[in-house]
Structures are given as C-alpha cells and as structure tokens.
Length: 526
Image: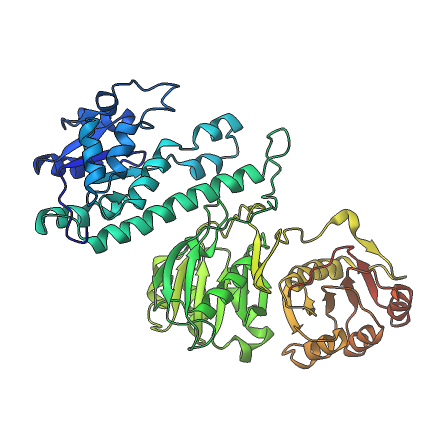
C-alpha cells in the first residue's frame, strides 16, 4: 500500500469548519462521495454540496443528543479495513460496507471551553469528544489504506495530491497519521489536566494537581538551530492553551529566529516584567536581571535600568510592560540588544527598532495587564524523570511582613524593599539585590554562599550602594552578610527570616542601625 491512494469516498465530520465548504466542493467535483453527520452535514447541505448522511450508511439514527452517531461497524469497518488484505475486503463486501479512503475529522473545542472561568462541569463533559477521536485513531492506525486529515491547513496539499498525483502519497499519509495521533494525544492531555484540577465534588480548585501519571503535550513551534551549545539539538514547543501571556504565544515582528538561549532569557524577562503594575523595563542576561526600573515612561525606565550594569546589558534581553514608543525604541537602539519583548509598539518605534538587523522584536499582548494562570506547572527534567511544582506566584504576603529591628523602616525604604523583593524572586539563588527607590542598583546571583552574593552585588554595582536597601531570597545563616551590607552603606534589609541564628542576625542589624523586615516567604530559584 505504498502506492498513491486514489480517493473515491470520504468521511467528513469537523467542529472547526475553516475551509470546509471549498474543500468538500472540490472533492465532489472530482466525483468523491462525502459521508457526513451533524453540524458538518448541515453546513455542506446549506452550501449546496451533496452529502450522504451517516444515518443512511448505518441505518441507525443519531441518539443521546448526538453522543452516538458514528460509533458503528459500518463506519469503523470502512475506516479500519486493510485494502491489501483480501479477507478484509471480502468481509466488507459480505456485510455491505463500503471502504473509506479519506477521513477528515477534528475535535470538539475542549480547551477553549474550559479556558472560560464560567464553564460548568456539565458543559466541559459535553465537550469531551468520543466519536471523533475514535475515527481519527482508527484512520491514523490504518494510514497505509486511509488518509486522515485533522488540520484544515492540510486541505490544499491533500487536494493537490488527489488531483495531480491521482492519489495521496504514502509519505503524506504517514505524515498525516503522525499529526493525527499528536492531535488526539494533546486532546486527551487537556482533558486529563482539567479533571486533575477538580476537587472531590467536581469543582475547580484553581490548581492543576499532580496526578499519578503525568501527561504532557506540546505542539512544535519550531526547530532551533541548536541548544545551549552548537553540538546540542533543540526545538521549541507550545504547551496547552492559557489566558496568560506566554512566550509561546508571542508574535515575532522582526529579526532572525530565536535561539534556545534567547527563549530562556526572554521568558525570564516576561516573568519578571509581569510583576510590575507601573511602567517598567527589565534587562536580562543569562536569565538574571542586570537592570530593572519603574518610572513614568518606558524610555525613562530603560534609561534607569541601563544604569544598573551597562556592561552586562550589552547583548541582553529587554522587556517592557507598556507600549514601546519612539523615544523608548531610541534608547534600546543605543546598545546592542538580542531581543525586545513588549505588549505593543508604536509605528515610529518599529521604524527605529527595525534599523537594527540583529534585533529580534517580539509582540506579546497582555504584558501590561497579565492574567496569571496558576494551573501552568513548572516542569524540568531531572534524574531520568521530571520534577513538577506549582509556579511561584506569591510574591509578598502583607500579613506576613514583620519589622524585627529596633528601627522602623521609613516609607521610602519600605517602597524600595518591596521593589527589591520582586527582583530577588527572579534572581538565581543565592540571591542578593540592592535597590533604591524603584531602580535596581546591584545584584549578587547564583553563589554558593550568601555573603559572597552580598559582596559581589556590591562589587558589581555601577551606582552608589550607600543609601540602598537589600533583599535576600532566603534567610541569612550568619551575620557576615549583614555586616558587609552595612559597611557598604545599606540602610534597610528585607528577607524571609527563619534562621536558627535570627536573634544574632537581628542584633547585627540593630548594631548597625539598620531597619529589617521579615517576609515569612522564601523565593529560591535554582
């Protein structure tokens, strides 16, 4: 069955009716019989296209509000019969079953349905397709004898092969089979994920949950030139749909393809920039922020962010949470930048940015008003398996804040500490962040000891440390970090607390006249 497959009979049952009418009209014009049911048959009949109803083939009406219509031997026998096995064809003839050559099916929009917060459990269950996946899987299994199409984008190519090659090639049938099984796999993954997020009474918990068997599905967006290094293969996949602005949903407006490292760094920029309510700019290098600021305008925010570490900013990733105007674009264009991501761009901004041939411009609507999705799990490979955890969406709990020093922080210090705490959440542990007002001043990231992070943040600072505040993603195990910060001129610190030496740490702060706040929340980022 490796020869081209002539098509004389097609089974068509689709929810997504994009391109359906012209596709089926072309099939009929080529003398191909179309068997269909439900809304698909009505749409074709309304367009004046001749259709044989499934009920005419099965001799049985649709029942249970359409839940059962194609689950019948006269349908599945026609799909599953191997045309190269005489016994199969003899059995079809014996039972009066005609074989299908082409099966065109796509499934109920389950994901789009459950993405809506108002969707009830009953509505969700009705969007779990049964007959559709059964037909898709049957045709995909029998791809040597049947072609299966689940994506309307394939209609044109399939018609071309039927017309020009007098049949659908074996290679195309194989490719369509792979796509079909991927289609049903992703569909079942979405259903499993939804059901895992229900409590014992069938109510949404707002969390995806961790089932005994982890099912992950993704659609490949693109092959990448290589991974972290040139000798590693890589690809970028999109996960299940979400209302949250995610990098997989970004539109690239300009520039060459993103690399593996570009994607990791840009995702870090997206995650951080979504934390801010006011106009902000972040600059990321190797997934860590090397610049960040909040200001009245994107341009001023970028100027302030650049002052943090202008050397590291070279070749960095820039993220904005407001429309980039011409002024802001001009600031970005002053320094070599790998990627810029923002919720919108003015025409003038794009004119400026597109003069930089090596800059990738990404449009990601929603960064200005992000709708965080707590059901998106954080997954990474480890030890031949996967580690899965809920995302760190809790930045600060005001009820947990506790001033533990003798000196109370000023209002300005408290505002600076809140800003620094947001940044620290997105810095690799051990993380130490210095900030003043709404501007990042220094960063100590990823060191094996916290005091080293504190010292490196001071050493690498381009702006004055004196008068800044410090944020630490976890508690100080010893007072040496406090001493180093005080010696550099820090006036206040924010940290989780919880060390066995907390009393010693607080005493150190009091000795130096520092204000210290405990958050009760840790933000490790490994």
